[in-house]
Image (cartoon, rainbow, N blue to C red; front, side, top):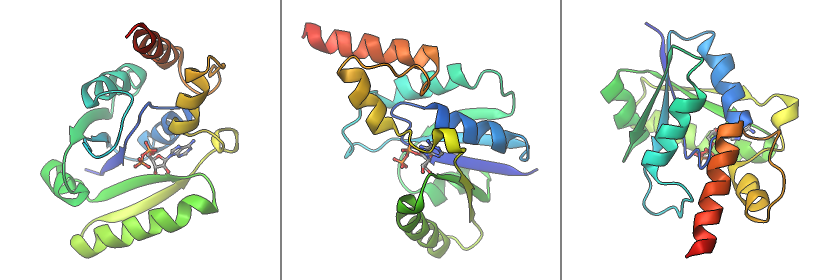
Amino acid sequence: MLKAVYPGSFDPVTNGHIDIMERCSGFVEELIVAVLDNPAKNSLFTVDERVQQLKEVTKHMPNVKVKSFYGLLVDFCRQVDAKLVIRGLRAVTDFEYEFKMALGNKKLDDNIETIFISSSTKYMFISSSSIKEIAMFGGSVDDMVPPYIKDQLTEKFNSREEI
Ligand code: ADP
């Protein structure tokens, strides 16, 4: 069974991520979207919130599963018995970082391969960090995230203002 892991922070998930998942779910039998639990990163949404959001926006893809992981990606891949890692590439600027990570993972476990999928042109400029910035200042993120995520962003920033 061809099983792949698509790891990331997904803080929050964007239409660019969903596009990669949709394209990927067409050629693997199971795609595990893996939310990295990294306490060192200052995230807007908790891991549980991100997992729940991802489950909601991937409901239309029956072969997509959502899990969180802590620690090394290669350990997680072994745990779920997947030998393929999927990463998205938006521009050349993503390449160096992604290439280094892929080589690092290959060194840790030679059985695990990383496959890069290029972003669709319309999503090339989308990143979770720019979306958070736009939403924080009340800008429209309509074409960048699903309506459900837009509502979650509004809710999060409203609750922060109340503090
Ligand atoms: P990380 O913190 O690991 O970079 P992200 O959640 O930002 O996690 O991204 C997860 C993966 O999705 C990465 O491979 C990233 O390059 C890719 N990605 C992010 N935004 C897009 C996009 N708009 N189109 C295609 N791939 C993307």
